[in-house]
Amino acid sequence: MALFSAAPAFADSGDLTAYVRARAADAAGDSEQAAAGYSAALTASPGNPLVAARAYREAFSIGDLPLARRAAAVLKASGVAPGDIALLDFADAVRGKDKRTTQAAIDRIGDGPFDFLAPVLRAWVAYSNGDKEAATALGALTGNPLAIRYARENRALLLIAAGRIDEGLESIHILFGAGQGSLDLRVTAAELLYRHGKKLEAAGLLAGEDPAFVEMRAHPPKSGRTDAAFGASRLFTRLSADLASGEPNPLSLVLPRLAILLEPGNARAHLLLADVQIKQDETARALTTLAEIPADSPFAAAARVSRIGAFDGEGDDAAALAAAKLLATNGDRRDAERYADLLMKADRYGEAATVYAEAIARSGPDVSWSLYLQRGGALDRAGNWAEAEPLLVKAVALAPDQPVALNYLAYARVERGENLAEAQAMLEKAAKLSPGEPSIADSLAWAYFARGNLAKALPLLEGAAQKLPSNATINEHLGDTYWALGRRYEARYAWRAAAVFADETEGKRIATKLTDGPPPRVGGK
Image (cartoon, rainbow, N blue to C red):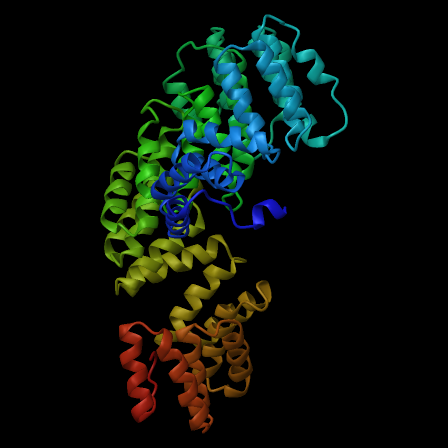
């Protein structure tokens, strides 16, 4: 649209200064300052749609809904309102119990890009107005597959809300599937069942060890309002969850904020909002959002995990470790594994090995091969090969066709000059299972090198270096192979490439090779 690509017109230079400062803050990721700047610019140029468009988006970023409404009014008056403004109008109308405005907002939603939501919103409004047959229309919906999908889920919820428990449960079970969407549907349905006093039926939906189910069984929700605000809030949350796997976009903020506006206690919406804030490096804001999730919420455990992610993403290793340790103290296998992963990241390998052992103990008889691999790897990194090797062997025994397990054990043996023929065979198997994987190609090449087969090693290393040119280990191995073949210039070129990406220990070793060539190989490096 030419309107949005052209420079905005301002009354005077002071107005322009506010806008420029807002743009600078926007570019720097400072949402608070950007929103303040756009608000000032909008005050100075109240009819400017470009300023209003930017103010509208930043308002949702920081949760300033009054600013969002001001900006939305300008955009509507200018005829350039984005489709989600109708969602904001709907939420405000429902909260204000204005039936006429609510219906008008639904009509606008039905005429816009979110038309697939309109039938569900109409049904929840009808139910809220006393129509106990509101679910009927959703069952007859045809056409848009996306609309049908949300309609079927909400028909089941409306049936339970109306006390038609058996029909609702039958529909819920038909819709069961894998993934977060099914989990969210079950949690909402169970909440409605608890409100009807149907504890056994609710518990049946919450069978399993997902933390949300465990928490809800332990702390059944208290009674609450089942009305249009509730239904719309859960619908917006559901759509937000569907969008969560991709990169954040404007709707990633709009939908959970509107869900919270309609239902302030919607913990799942808080969690989704916090996850977007973490992705946008707004750690402080995310922590504030997560703090609003009650300790007895079904999503309290997920909120604690998100807190760890917030600290970790910000680079606050100490806070991330402290939060992970607290969660792992009384948590399950996943909590212990998460804490151990962070200990590995912090190079605290011995401690990580201990915590991985706890994760194995908590897993019971169905312990995964990956935990043995992780614990073995931690012990190996801690310098305890004698204890590490049996665990790595067990990982391979449990998962003989897992390339990552084969690769780790075999490469570790090659580095130590142990069982080279067996290690080579394992790596050849891993390469067949995962063809073209550069890390496995490097390991197999290194086994060939260790056994003197340079002709086989070289093409594998050259191919791996092309795929991962920034990998220090692959480039160092390539340099060693060139050197062994008498190609000294190419060897030093490869080592120099390795040195660019090497850590301190690798860097010292490579510097020696650049000066003196590699030392005689005995076992490992």
